[in-house]
Length: 113
Image (cartoon, rainbow, N blue to C red):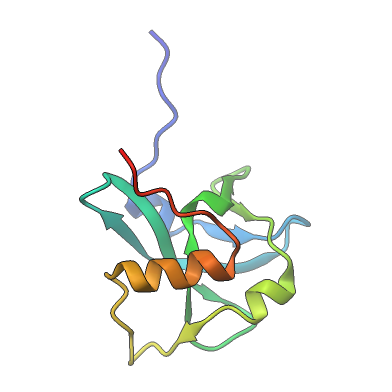
């Protein structure tokens, strides 16, 4: 039996986020888990080139080498992404927030099971 490729959230939280060129651009802050849809719709990240945090759809990340994750997104899209400060989080547990970040990153939201 082959062993599935799995990582714990605790392990992933320590892994760097890199762009397509391999440059480290940030790190994970939190993982949002949708209990109704049984999935991780998005993550909250800290980017090196901006203050505060940004929500990014989990589906945009690819696993990289040596415990890293690749985010192949145009830098202008990251620069203009809705952000919030470390001490003033919006209600990130709403469909409205999810829709906002999915719209920004041009990702379709699938809420069907």
